[in-house]
Image (tube, rainbow, N blue to C red; front, side, top):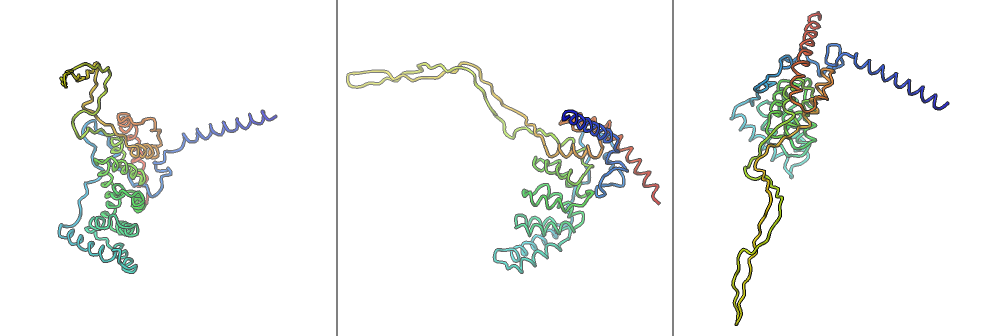
Length: 334
């Protein structure tokens, strides 16, 4: 009786899994017009860099123009001096709580784009309430503030501050955020590259997919020349290399000097190349590519060539069809 009932339950479970599997395969990819992409991540049209195949040689084009700090050197110097005074007056150890609250309010209202970089440089390393006030000011400072938040989310050493900066970023990511992601993914600091990849996934920056593909793996040569390691296989033979005469009263002798001879093979490693795998970049690439396309891309692994073929032969045609659907949907809106 029990075995019959168990078999029936197992059969029902298998049929449910088969139905679920067939249903999953029939679901429209989440990035299509009728899909389930959250409104915060939707774009009116497919980004241009996703409609163009990856080049076979040369570099990947930037997602956005390189960031240029707004303002003039005179303005920057003036803001540097202003924030230095504010820091010593309102945030010193001897400052009263009232003075501190006044300083925090002043920081939150400082939204001049030319002041953002000076403000972060002046208060970096302060207590968390001060840094959060700086992040609040960045959130209200337009494109320059968005670039600053994205840069902080990539470069700051404090994980809590990076998380707070990420939480204040707009969605979908603006051109300023894409510029910061581009800078991070092309940086020489491997931690920055990894964090930029994680940030791209957090804000669903599908524009970063081409750059993410090539940022998964990096190779770097050692900074110094010379032997890196050696391995010796052999035996040591002792022999008398010399003798030293020793004389005394009515006596004479020789003190032997023992030498060592190594017989065998020595392997010297004089140069090497280091391959670095950016796990955060890879995980964001797989998750975002799979979600955006509805395709199983996990099997591509770390193979850059396989990713290159997938992007050009499968993803670009898919995005072109999607762009046509979006254009038709936009044309039907009264």
